[in-house]
Image 1: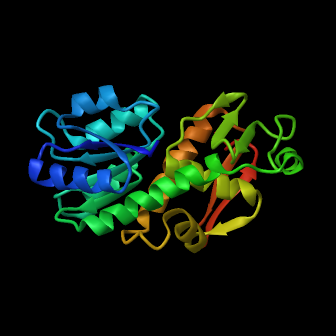
Image 2: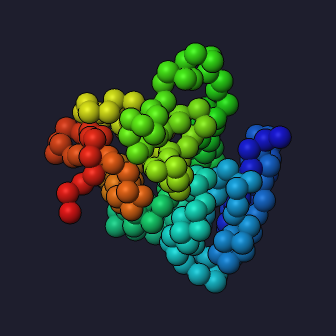
Length: 240
């Protein structure tokens, strides 16, 4: 079965051609026209939400925030007619993985969706050899944080962290080089790739969300910022 995409858009002029295109690409697509319906429908079966900000019953930013609060970990791509970097940064701050401004070309939107779904599915569909799988993941005895790339799960004290696609991608790359600096350029290239045309502030916003979730989980690690260079995942909780 194809990947499942929930389109949250009340404008038929945008939704109908988008649904037709996604269906032709092999995705399983469902559409709702209101934020309340999106909050009810978005569950573990949905891989990605395409979310319009201008919904009739509630602001799309509130929908995005509440999706993350109810632990939706799939991708969220915002469609917005609003102009200005502030709105885009706010959208990323409340949990969106990407945004695209209206009017947009369907080819560009498809490229963004494919990139996001590819990153979400690559690790979960990979099957590591038996010996390798035992050697790579950290163990609870080594640290309170365990990042299982193959299962796309991050555990702190045995409890899974509710991470979005981009948050997990960032954490897995920092964890793979724990104690070493990973440059901003490398993170942007590997997590957002060549299909990203927006501001690099999205990296800082996503790091901030990830840092907060790590602190709230009690994980014995901290993300250290090296201004103008990059980020490092260090052992030990952040000082109070």
